[in-house]
Length: 455
Image (cartoon, rainbow, N blue to C red):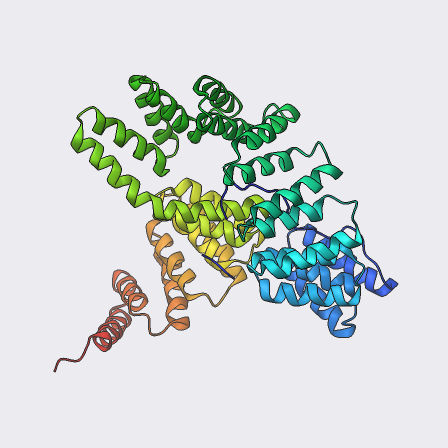
């Protein structure tokens, strides 16, 4: 898996799942059985079934394609590309095979190849809008804005009322500093969907840049009516108020933005500037220092959100967001990202282990134990999982279960000194003196082996 690009480029593409099969009756039966498993979220089983059928007959295009889309969901992009490529070669006129292959190439940052594949899909189905939207994603990742605009305009020529395409077009125009065109695109998206909070927000940002603060304020407040707990509009309102000399309102809006999203860098930057202007030098400098610390991690968060905007089923992107949120202390959000990753790829040991660790940190011990046990059901040789499970049982004072867990951890990872130490303590607490001393002796021996030799 490729575990650890910007959410402002929220082009909606998604991964095409196969909705119809083709080929012989045997192929259709194999495909249907594997697809049923996939629909139930049993991706690894579905992939294993696809592999079994393909061993018997590797020329099943639909089965190759289904396997490719499932491998892509699990972040196994190299294998996914190989399966989609085989499906494409077996069925050159299958547009879904080309689109899926293009999606894999985009995820691998092979954007030139993706663009070529999407263009071939367009030649097969010039009336469809989706290939043009996907082509725009490939262009955007290469900063080829003019070509992205052209692709999105062609998509709109085929689906004039596709809301997210108007929104995406506005974002590209914004990147090109074509603010008038961006304004028109966002206004069209809002006309089609008045509850589109993102479009209201970006329209407000554009109106600030065009020098229309009153209209900007109205758009930003509209975004908040659509989504009250939306931090970014508060940050922009702070900017509007600050530039109008409405300092108390600016401070209140920026503080509200920080309260809603305490790790977004922009509000700290603007509030720090506000305090510096009014002589609160120490506080202003402190906020600017926070801004600098947050900026780097926030850029990577933005990139992962961008991936999810285009590929909502990317388990790796959810996992990576979880990692980044943990670094920022945003444990609730991290847990949700791990849950999303597991909904896509239930066998992901790292995601399940990290989710259980968060539960343990939050003193949700029963839930942590449940997740560790689920993890070990999928990965019975995962030594760290047994070690963590032992720790969780210790918190419930279940020394017997804790001992069993650490015994398994020691068997699977005999060179891990900490596991021997914990198991030794458990033996000693339960009056098993000889066993406890033996584990402590092993612990000290392993610890000494790690110490650098003295000259």
